[in-house]
Image 1 (cartoon, rainbow over the protein chains, first blue to last red):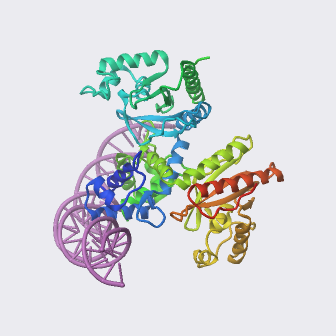
Image 2: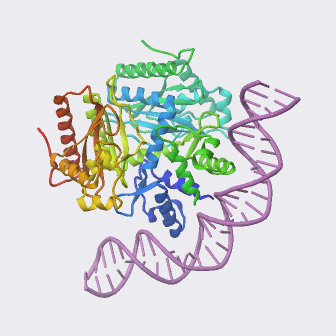
Image 3: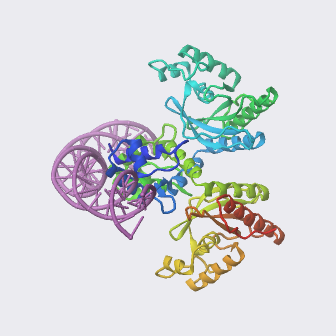
Length: 254
Length: 254
DNA sequence: ACACTAGTTCCATTTTATGCAACTTTAGGC
DNA sequence: GCCTAAAGTTGCATAAAATGGAACTAGTGT
């Protein structure tokens, strides 16, 4: 296996729960010899992929990674615009928001926008969710045809919880509902006590698609606020689509 | 040279002016054989460091890079807090702001916060400035001793413009001024028509330092607004320092 | 259909990574 | 301050990989 894959594995360690790595941490997480971990971290450090925290032996991603990430958002008009929309909704409502993408059968957050409410959902980036078992994922699946969705799950699907679709048939039913409404709801499905609404937007030019998502405590948000969020998301996604030159405008709410 | 360095070079291509790369671009930018560039991009793609845009042959940084970047911001309490402060000032004043770090003798923006005014300074992340020839850089240099600064420039310095310090002696004079005021001013030094104010904040735990910076059109901001910005920056930096456990509070303005 | 450009694959050679063990450094405990 | 244990680094032979030239393939425009 190339050292590139090892380096990628190291970067993958940085996520929701892990913000820094030592040689020993790396040994444990990747199951490689100590000597190797030592040289791997050094090589990554010298390449700029990692940096040490102060002058300790703990490592975190390097500035190079930051610059590249910022460039990513620039490169994608879709992600950039979606992030702007979600940032605004997040600021207006005080709830946490995400922009996510479909990677195979998983959804990964691409930008996060922490809310401002005292009780808000804490951003959990790096955590990948199964597309079929998350509102965001179903919003993205709704852009595909039933046949394409079936092709994604040649061996059937494993539901993440009893609130998630238990079979492909049920998934297709719920995805059809999402297509009808334009919005995908998730009720305490991925995280206890947390509801979410997601709307998908795609770039007709490249076929790239993202989901705009707002998450909030289930107990604290009444129906009228949910409707407000729904309207903001639908209109925001419509703005994104329009800006990218969609001829047939997506659903919009007034 | 390890493939890791090649991969880092590829990521470094993504910056202010370049948001996507093809095999041929890579050949030109890195000066490597075509066969190599082809395999390099594929390896990076398979490792998750790159992804193709839609189903074209153009590449941009992968989601892995995004996740790591977000983790980076999380891991650095200092950067996170500084970013929050600058975001607030940016929102309040409408001007663009940055948080930057010193990398060797250069300053690199770590987060950016675009302003909201019609005439605002456009964020230019990825662009590295020489520390001695930028207000932000001198704010960071001001945290070091004169001897340390001299050690950074064993061969003297090359001024970026005639508004920048022309010698180490002049640099030290201006840095001393920054130490006295607590704020570092830049007047149309890095970019024509653009003024900036920077204040440094450091983490006493790790010794890590960042600069908080607000940039604005020189012609449009009157003296009283400049004072307001200065006050916000100083107080913000003091808040950051206090939150990280600085015992001797930095300069604060009321 | 043709020429042209971009991208990929093949293959022998060179360079780099690997894993073990020995060695050095760092951090606590007394 | 000395001893010990844990963390980290380095040396070396082997195994694996990257490299660059050239041949090959896939698109693009005329």
